Amino acid sequence: MNLPSDPATRELLDTLRHIVGAAQVYTDGDLTAFERDWRGRVRGRALAVVRPGTTDEVAAVVRACRAAQAATGVSLVPQGGNTGLSVGGVPDASGRQIVLSLQRMTAVRALDAANASLTVEAGCPLQHVQEAAEDAGFLFPLSLASEGSCTIGGNLATNAGGTQVLRYGNARALCLGLEVVTAAGEVWQGLSGLRKNNTGYDLRDLFVGSEGTLGIITAATLALFPLPAARITAWASVPTFDAAVALLGRARQGLDAGLTAFELMSSFALGLVERHFPQLEVPLSGSAPWFVLLELSDAESETHAAARFEALLEPALAEGCVLDAVVAGNLNQSRHLWHLRESIPLAQAQEGLNVKHDIAVPISRMADFIMETDAELAAAYPGVRFVVFGHLGDGNLHYNVQAPEGSDPAEFLARHEADINHRVYEAVQRHGGSISAEHGIGALKVDLLPRYQSPVALELMRAIKRALDPTGLLNPGRVVRD
Image 1 (cartoon, rainbow, N blue to C red):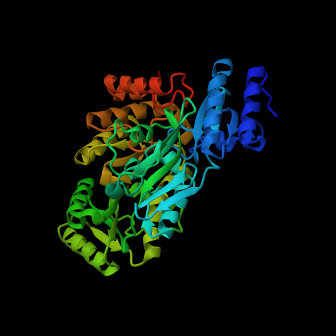
Image 2 (cartoon, rainbow, N blue to C red):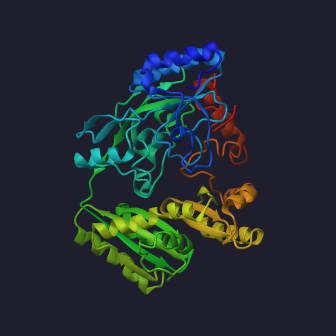
Image 3 (tube, rainbow, N blue to C red):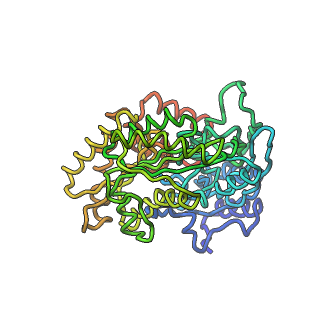
């Protein structure tokens, strides 16, 4: 066991063992699952991992750490499924941070069918939330590739996006209320499930997206929706990026609220899937520079949905906006198309480390952004490869840069990541975009934020942090530095 040398720290750990049980405080053994980020790029060192089982235990842990903070220098890092991509949920290298894991808090507390809402604890995996809703005849539409591992608390803490933002909005839009433990160890009960509550500042929206820096989400009340009678997926090849944008406009006009997803993929991104997962058949492979995955959710029937897709795609094909298209004939084919889209990040990982960007740009300016940024990076780094895919329907692209063929990806990343980030983010700013669309700021982008956020906004954020967490106990050095 790694015993701390100072009495104050030993006393704190004993107090935490008393609160949650000795078996739920990890100080030795392999803590990699808690200390390493999802992408495997950063490994911190935790003083301990503490796993409370109730909200009262979370509050007691926070109070104990705050009382001992001056003497021990400890701080808390809230953690859900540890699937974040901005290094916001793992400890730093100081050995003085305690990972507060919500893994044990997985209960579905209540389902209110009349209110179309579901109350769950923060550690409940997203997939379990989806299943609980479906078992009751409802849809919870938040959908991510990591839904089997990520937790609803983490989804809300980062305001996760996913594939259905186009229709249903980000995690914030799906949240009706929260239960939060504050930095003082008090519990704010805001789980009413009201859709209208205009009694002062919106505390719910303050904590959603705060990445555990203002409070610890312990439970949430979520909005549910009717299950669609039919879901149909189509896969289309398009000749240009502008054509993809034009198809999006047609789909919005023709399918209206039935359009639940509009995903864009470059031919190179899909080529990586073919290279590393040859068992996966890519429809229309190699026929165009860009591909689009569309999903239609229909309240009537599959026949009606198929007719709506036909009415959209036939004129688009005739006019050259779409080069070719296939429509999934059954659920298995639809799942296969989605599996292709979700396999792109895995294929990238097989290809080697790459420079990732989670950006938002107004859809009307996205084609110019890609053309200009591709040209600038290609001139600066001959042979560099672009893995571009994402949620075109809501203006969010994953604009990733892969090392030239045959070069060492790790060496390329170490030498050039900072410059590539600078070039990409400067282009994003020129086109009126955001350097973080859905992954958050975390520790990865905290020092970039002052360049791309206004001084007024930054000072407002710092003022909120100082007001709610004056001692810097919760996730310090993430989102904003004070």
